[in-house]
Image (cartoon, rainbow, N blue to C red; front, side, top):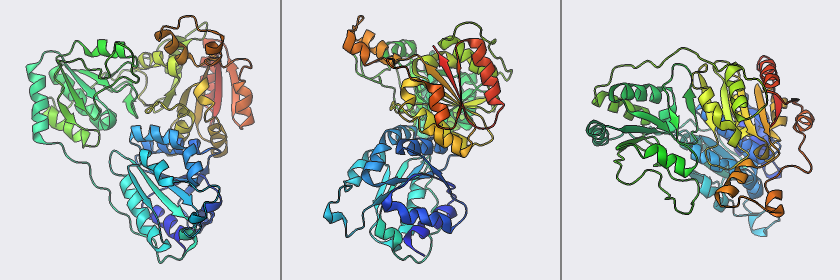
Length: 514
């Protein structure tokens, strides 16, 4: 057995099932080792950002880590943007990065780089391997570190000689450390704040937005009458009929401040205090206005669902609080395609158990209201703001949940960053329906120009926010990647094509001309 084989067998023993890979020369022993044992599925991504984004989507839905296999520092660098998003989502991921042989690094070959410096900002755990005999134990430690709730990124840097060198055996799994329990004092402070104030909000993030956390939040709201609000870009939010209504904090700071201003107390559970995405003149970084009591019930890395349950018990909340379970869909939209009709069309036909990955930017906003009482579904969003997450994340979610339909609600500009994900969807026959919003522009940047006071941008500024001249032909791009593509120009046509795609196995792309 060599080091690479010990790594693969250790990963399988720990329950890892998938490796999203874009390997190179320094990873060939690991590629060969995949054939040495059954139980680990390799999935090729044609760009490293597809691999890391897919590992993010997989981790969010499977709630356990996948592997990524990346080639040296430059290959890893190609995947950093979606690892930035995954770090913000607190997704469990184990990166395997091949490196030059230990005795070759000093030669400063063309692909030599400081991989540790590249990996540190997006990794919660990192280790460089020095011997083949140590690789199995390091792999078990990495998987355990990644799996520590709610999840984090673990990175192993593996010189090629440590892959082909001898190893004795694989390592036994290492049980992840449990998340820390919140103190009774934190629970009592939150309860006191809720009792002494009339207008109270519960600001939720992370694990608070999964089924168990939402069930406890519903109990708290039933007893206290508090308002439930979540992060602007939640990693994973369970929604639809039967779940409590949770309002999403607006993206623009003035709207967020306006939402939060009426409250006397905002209890925070599983989230950080909200801040503006960017600094704007005359707007603060912190979005909660001064003077509002903001007790921290649980940090994102705490046992958030247990903390919410403890708070519910502390305030004497009912044992359960049922949310309205009646499914209510919007009427099928008619007429021209725009943000309202697109969101209504998806909500009108989406199946129960759908997973919606939203990177639709400006076009995606009305979907949230339209789907509030739709069949129960899971909502994923762009956690870190690095665009190009949508198509890969949807792909990884489809790998994790093959019996559920994934809807990638996708802006055209950000889709161009990682369109290679379509090829992986075709190759793996993933059940992904991509609803592509083609407005021939970076529309959010046009909004930001206007907010900066540039109401009449000049020719050069307009050219940097336009995706025309030439127009991008998404149906042709999809077909070139092996995915069925169709173009629609009316709400009726969109609804019809959605129904057709949702009933057909495998991937489809529907290009909406807006």
